Image (cartoon, rainbow, N blue to C red; front, side, top):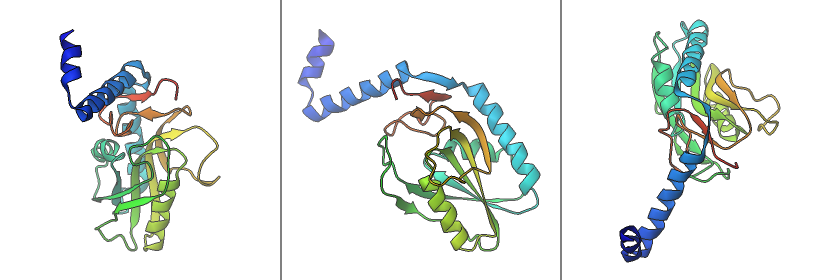
Length: 201
């Protein structure tokens, strides 16, 4: 009764925010765990090993794709024990929604990568429109070679182009809406310590 009374006295905007937050909590409560933290960490370490073999002598520039790639990139970098430079790039199509739209560039690289190998680190290869745009940007801006590393490769036939593949990926997953380890649900749960699928999506 007290909870209802407090809720009824809230400003309409506060009530809406409270209801939205309750929905966010419910999504986590009902979600299916596809990969737990230990499984994800093993996959990240394996990606790191493969990159070390290929790029240890290339002096690459590593670009983290914000915001989704933040957690994966941070963890992956600790496995890359060779000289490299790190920067970030921010391009998005989602804007906290669950389906993509127009590509928005928020920040382009500040580190020069002309005639250098580039490693783009992102959270997921879904349809791949954002990743494709970033790859093309780096190629046209003078990168010697462009490599990509994603934590998740989603299993479906809707890629931006038939030949679009990540150079390195950690885990594959079913075609559902997922979050965790940098991937979000409406701006939330990037901090979830596993890969989760939204119930019904």
